[in-house]
View 1 (tube, rainbow, N blue to C red):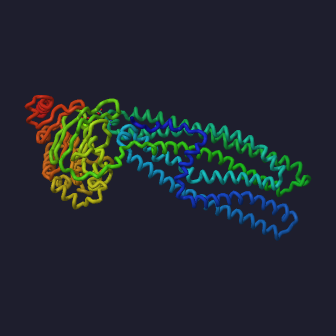
View 2: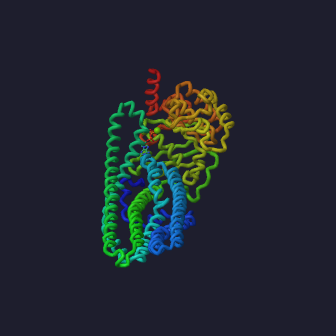
View 3: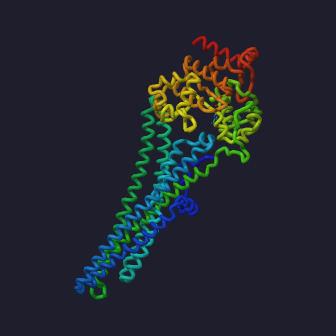
Length: 596
Ligand SMILES: Nc1ncnc2c1ncn2[C@@H]1O[C@H](COP(=O)(O)OP(=O)(O)O)[C@@H](O)[C@H]1O
Ligand SMILES: [Mg+2]
């Protein structure tokens, strides 16, 4: 059964702090342990130095200034200045270090996710929207960004700073300290309320963003259809609805922030009022000095910043955990066909291929192929024919081992393909599809397609041998022609020819064309048939799925599939004589081609 990614909403259910998840996340930071430790040390130093500044200035005011000791006053002022400078330097170090570590870790996560997606089986890709995967590689990874780059260390530093501040405050004047801290419950209540609200709205924002990404991906890919059916306005309206909802959610989050920060400031003002009220009573009398008063004003200021930030940091952590859950969600999908432990590399084809009572279904429910059996010998050209949906492409997919079949076996030179290493199997097969994908690079790069052993010279030789040289020379810049995304600037026929060249220049023993001639005009098709003829003479085995008769007629053997079953096998002449499905198909085609 298909394993599916959680839809974009479902994975958002994590609440509180999931420690197991956090630990898995920290694995990505492990390579930077040393640097991270340095970051923590610097941050801790900063946390200690920050509250020392008001303390030193208190000393300067209460002692040096009060007793007019100008010498020590100057020294203490210099001390304050030094603390400010050291603190700034520490901040620089911490920020730079943490951002750098964070970006490195993100790079690692992004690479891992993409690599994982590349290796997932087609079964998975069939059932997962591309937009969702793109969101995982981009937005979700980005969701870890702040956590990796500052969240964790800063959280530690902030908590430490708060602790140090309380220490310094109590040491300076414990009664004033208690009084100042008495406003704390208000702050805690405000923060808790804020956190709950913001968390909810953030989750909604992320879901909405994923929805928008999926929408854009699907509809921009289908732009031709949209324009053809003049659906621009309608699709625009649909997007506008998504977009508006996003705006609403963003506005709600802005509202919470806009309420929260002034509330914090209000509590801060309250703390100042309390301190001043206390000062009005006790200044001079109760041992309260001007220096202490000034120091406390600064403490209070310092105190409120991390409290505001801790709330933020908690959100960063939440975001990271939600993202992490979604990332691990995709990383945990093991949906690919694994090589058997005793799988061997596929040697060059020597005898042939046999399908032995193969039964297959994509979803485990609807049968697609039933008891399919046939053999093809090396060097043969075999045509697979049948109505749309008969199962022709599925036969080919099984041979490439894109999917696992449920019963029967596929034997290559007598060995089950389950016992062959997939990579080596696929190297020996060249598959050309009806709408084969080209990538936005040059034609040469598309033909070579990462196979380093293929030189430009070899490409030319192969093209020459196959009689496709002329075609390439006709392209605007020959092999250097740059193909647009998905090959948009080439005609469908040209795209197919490039895809065919890509398949032919390799060393593949088995060449499969799955309706790969559909876009070719008759002249080009003749060109292609010449090429196929030469490939056959080189001893390569060809499987051709085509509707055009000329191609099928020339095949050594025709296999007729009907609703997932092999119904007829034989040469063109034999099958015509038999007057069955093939003969009927042939007559229909023939009439159509005569009419055309
Ligand atoms: N990736 C897929 N997932 C589920 N069902 C599929 C998939 N590809 C094809 N099918 C179904 O399998 C049947 C055979 O399809 P296919 O082999 O593509 O036929 P053909 O190539 O002969 O037109 C069809 O009913 C089709 O709907
Ligand atoms: Mg097909």
